Length: 172
Image (cartoon, rainbow, N blue to C red):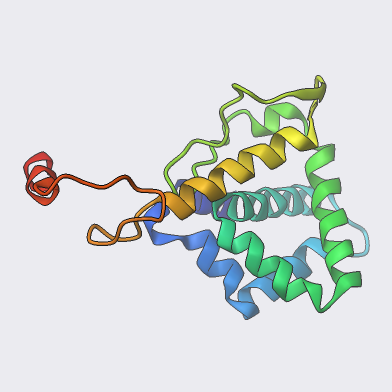
C-alpha cells in the first residue's frame, strides 16, 4: 500500500512511474511479482498483488510514453505480454469498486483522469473500452501539445505574445 501511495501522490514532474517502468530491471521485478502464484496463497498475498496491480495501472495510465515503451519491450515476448495483461486485468477486475474510491489518477500533463464526466459505461461496474481509449487519446494529444520546457513550445501551441516571459515571471 505504501508503494501505491508513493506512485499515486508523487509529483508528476518527477515521473516516478514512467522512470520505474522504463527501467528494465524494475519493470522485470514488478511484472514478475504480478505473475507469481505462491503455494498456499494467503489473503495478504492477494492484497499485495492487488496493490501492485493498482500501482502498475497508475504508472501506465500516467504517461503515454510509458505505454509505448511497454508495448515495445513486451512485443518481443508475446506470451509474457498476454500473461501479464491477463493477470493485471484479473486482479483489477476482482477488486470491489470501493477499492478505487480514494484513488486519484493525475497524469503527466496534470490532468485528473479519475473524473467520471464523459465516461460511458457498459454496465454499472465496467466502463466501455472505447470510452477509456478516448481518455488516453486525449491524454496523448495534451502531452504532445504541452511545451516540455518554458522556452520550448509544443506543436499545438498558439503563437505567444512577445512579452509572455515577462508575464510568466510576474505570475510566479
